[in-house]
Image 1: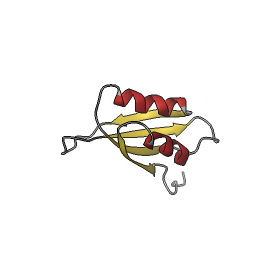
Image 2: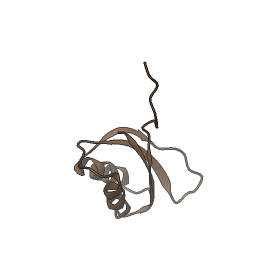
Image 3: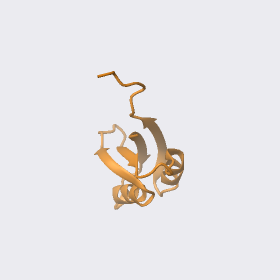
Image 4: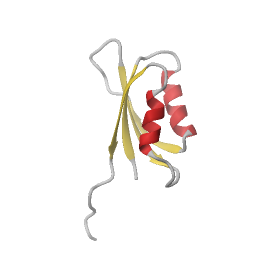
Length: 88
């Protein structure tokens, strides 16, 4: 299952590397990264598409760990897996 994590953070040296590094170290594979333009001067946003490497990895735990990183102001998670699949 692939999930999207929206992270709002204060841009500083190494901020993106810290965020992606934590995701990788916690057993999730980064499947995509998007850095949309934000209107505010103080915060940036990064959308990560992630997939757990095994069934024992919990998205709620990962989001709680990301929220503890210096400069992170908000973390939101959303599943990208479709609710149903069309029959072939």
